[in-house]
Amino acid sequence: MALNLSKIKGLFVVPEDEEIINKKTTEKKKENKISKKTTKSPEINLPGSTKFPQTNSPGKGEFNKQIFESLTKAIADANLPGEDYLEFISALQAMKNINLDERVKMQTVLATLSTKGLTTQKIVESADYYMKVLENEKEKFKQVMIKQTEGKVGNKHKQIKTLEEQNRKKADKIKVLTDEINNNTSQMGKLKKDLETADLKIKSTENNFNVTFSYVADQIANKVEKIKSLTTN
Image (cartoon, rainbow, N blue to C red; front, top):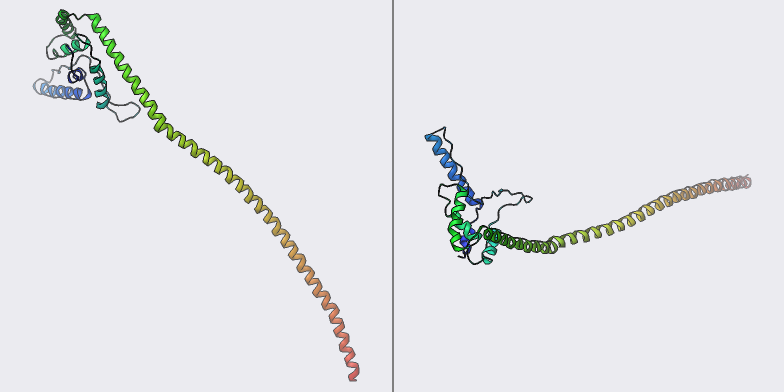
């Protein structure tokens, strides 16, 4: 009997189910503590129960309903006709409230479904088949991740490399300009020193000229004054 998607999803214990179970267990423990402090509440264990760590850490990951829907749909779409692993687990889950050992429950379900042709080998083979279905979904997911990485993350890596290359080229230009500025500054320093030397030389020559000029001119003026005094006498 082929199971629909809703029933197939019900074969798996998800974090929400575990929270409900744990809550009921806690409440039952509290009730037992009130009535009998020395009595411990029995733990509830479901077959195939898997604990999913609830965490916000991107490194560890967390249970995702959308992914769960996708995986269980893939199993539903690939559901084999007749009795197999899925029907076995479905029948086993129907006995979850019966107070029997899990092994006894499995033997009971197998004995019942064996009348419809189900065997241990068929259960294992069909389970392997559904695992391959899941592995195929995992490979599809991997390819999608690769494309997204190449498209989004890869593109950002390219942008980073482009910006790094631009920065390197600009840094090279800055170095060239800095070297030119330093060279110009050095030349300006030399020119300023040369200018100061030239100014000092010009001033010195000018001062020398003025002193010499005064020396000659004063002598002429002095002589002229003396000559003028001769005529007045």
